[in-house]
Length: 473
Ligand SMILES: Cc1cc2nc3c(=O)[nH]c(=O)nc-3n(C[C@H](O)[C@H](O)[C@H](O)COP(=O)(O)OP(=O)(O)OC[C@H]3O[C@@H](n4cnc5c(N)ncnc54)[C@H](O)[C@@H]3O)c2cc1C
Image 1 (cartoon, rainbow, N blue to C red):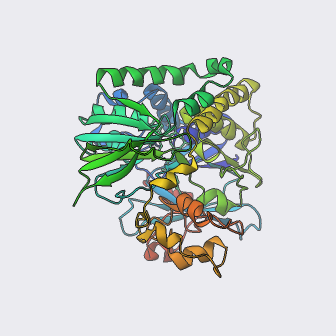
Image 2 (cartoon, rainbow, N blue to C red):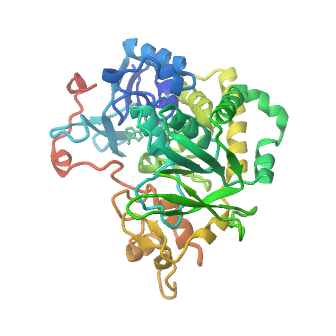
């Protein structure tokens, strides 16, 4: 029987696993989290299950069905609390890839080290949210929108009682909705794109919109929630500074021009005790890069119509191939799962996936980051919070300096801290390459060890004996 390993149990990975099982493969589904569902269906753990979980999720019944079908499938092995920390060539066979897994609760000692040697690998590791820096963004009380959403959905915790949500993209809307559902007052949602940018992105080829009526209904629901909770929605507006002594006490918002430069004379201060910021998403590329997958100019994994990467028997699905929301991730996962199991996906499924891609291209056009945001930085704004590297340090005279990203990172230390550039990497690249384009193909996404692991666990012997997996889920 063909063995398929799926990394990531969000919408893409779940549908990949389901389809590969149904096509006759033996599937091992691996996810770092304690629960299945990924970001979209992040929920309370089984031990603290809520009867009204569906209130915080769209398509919750779809998730329940997927989870039940995988749990019951005799050829599906589910590994939660299991990190894939590296992907390497399989030196024992001389071909194929070895998937290095460490299983067991993240802070336990004696986690189990496993090496999986699949016939086919589906990567569905999703994305991180992206946050553009601004003065004061290192104050306690400033959260990424994704973190606020994860706390609301996964713990029922509101990050503050008077919260402002800002950035770019439709993701700001579910974040505001979740915050109100866990008891916060949302004082406003500030979208950086101006109406013209939004209209040009969303209204292009309007006939294609029939392909994603589900998303439009979701949008209508959020709009109704805004009206019910009296949440102002401002376009062409951004948080350009946060203020406070020990924690955030207020933010300055300003109107932006078409290029996202703050317009003089429009700044105003709003009192808050938390602010949630998200400027779209950036794909989690560590594992695709380790597997040797080609990454496109757009910074997503390059795939063909069957979700195949350039590496034999390695498939990619979901937000690592482009940001387009849950339905696109799920459809790509279904295609990848069938193809990885050696079955040709039906034309209707391919067409469904392609329709969802129209949504992704609108999203990108309507909410793309514009360069004027640099105008709200001050010389001492921290860009890399872990290593406390300021904007001015990144702009020290470039004469005589290497133009390679690695050496520039080493000399400024930007992106070398504990988050390894997950939070600031794209911004650091943009700013370091601003005066002179960077040379070479290196990106801040290249992290040979994808997940931090303890030295003791690294030194422990790895097993390929799948019986050792029993009891780890
Ligand atoms: C923090 C956050 C919150 C979001 N919340 C929403 C929301 O509420 N509503 C909405 O419409 N969209 C939300 N999104 C966007 C959302 O991610 C997508 O619409 C959709 O979930 C993408 O599905 P996916 O399967 O591609 O990835 P994900 O759902 O992100 O799933 C990827 C999975 O891969 C796992 N993984 C990653 N790396 C490894 C590794 N090395 N080893 C093992 N497992 C790994 C992760 O734990 C995760 O479960 C959110 C995004 C983020 C980043």
